[in-house]
Length: 84
Image (tube, rainbow, N blue to C red):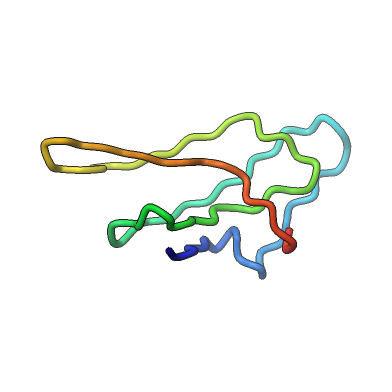
């Protein structure tokens, strides 16, 4: 298992803080896999401010699998931790 962290999820990247209520903001991250990920690998994509409500998202991948039984299995979620 490995934890892969994008630049926008790094400890040195600031968490965006909107001013006012009801403001829709975007948080994003990109990561280019250079090898097959292990089932337990974690990719930290971006930081989300405390109190934010996630309203959507998407994953884009090209050429996911080239064998006869192509599969793509992913779990997307929020990892609570003491850093953010």
